[in-house]
Length: 190
Image (cartoon, rainbow, N blue to C red):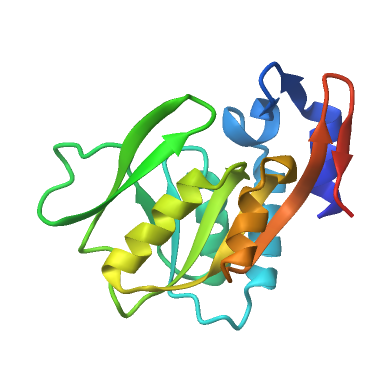
């Protein structure tokens, strides 16, 4: 998606440690017009794939997942990063390591919201090493749900997660794919 690349180049900022800050349009402040475009692009990419639910993980993936869910006309489920008092009853749980925050947590989803009748599109804001996506795939597996594929706003290809998931047989569609980043330059995969 050319527009995502343009937004990254004009509004993104590379921080130490390989972190791409896109808070001005995607993570803290959301450009709602651009969000709609992302939802439409994701819906177009997965048109005809039989998606019945979209699954993401809190919190930055929720807006993108909701935009795609609105266009596709399907519910959006988000895994919480910790079991809280409002998650009652049986749950699916999967360990996830956060690259950005450097912590481990348990992603949890109520068994009420993910079933073996679902065909799931996994949506997230970033794909780096793939830890969050592996956790979401694990949750789908526990539910017996089929994974239609993954839609990612920004993939940091140099961290290998997307290549690993594709090699495992998953369809991964990223709106922008970054091959390398330095403090002064971002190179996109063509």
